[in-house]
Length: 264
Ligand code: LHQ
Image (cartoon, rainbow, N blue to C red; front, side, top):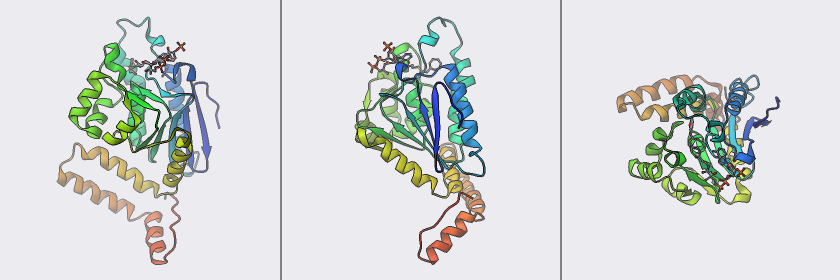
């Protein structure tokens, strides 16, 4: 596997793990880190060949998940067009994760601030260590949430909580994040990676194409009418009903054995 400077990409079985690895800055995003993440996603997207990779796990090295944009890289940037940075790096990253034809798990090991929080929310399943915190830090530096946070937040927690999370920019504990539906589950700090890996492994053994259609359907549900969504579901089942995984799922059910899905 290729070696990177600001991230690590490791594979074990069908799970790829992308670790943000600039712990001295709490894994803040730099342009160089974004370019490495894009390269890593190229590798993950092609599945390392023949659908070998079937789930992506994202976590952070050290005590944080990700502190958002590296502000030191921005210190001389008064008047710079931040939108250009979003267009070049953050927006494609979020869109790629949502379009990735496999489930994405975020293991939020510590603070997730600014675009680091957005990244966690872009995962299909986010689990957090009990000591982790979510901070929509944008307003603290005079910005509005980005990297998809204005889209994700109201959908996940409703408009009232989304507005307060974004405007007050207070730390949200992992327990509260779970209670509000910002994430799937909180686990004890020491258990985070074991739990996240177990979830990723389970997802990697699931019918990958069906999971990919689910994530697309959930995203489109927000814009679709009921009739439009029923039509999307019809198209999904037409496609999925013709997969080896569907045939295997039905055969395994009838034979009263566990299915062996291949993602095809
Ligand atoms: C950092 C960072 C950081 C550099 C901690 N950068 N060094 C923005 C602009 C442009 C385009 C696109 O989009 C965006 C989106 C965004 O993400 S805006 C939001 C940017 N992020 C923030 O405003 C969060 C800044 N960080 C913090 O508020 C705190 O560090 C948090 C609350 C995350 C953690 O606090 P502590 O646990 O007290 O840690 P610390 O503040 O002591 O940080 C540890 C070190 O990490 C420290 O360096 P040092 O050399 O003193 O040890 C920090 O300077 C560095 N660091 N975040 N974003």
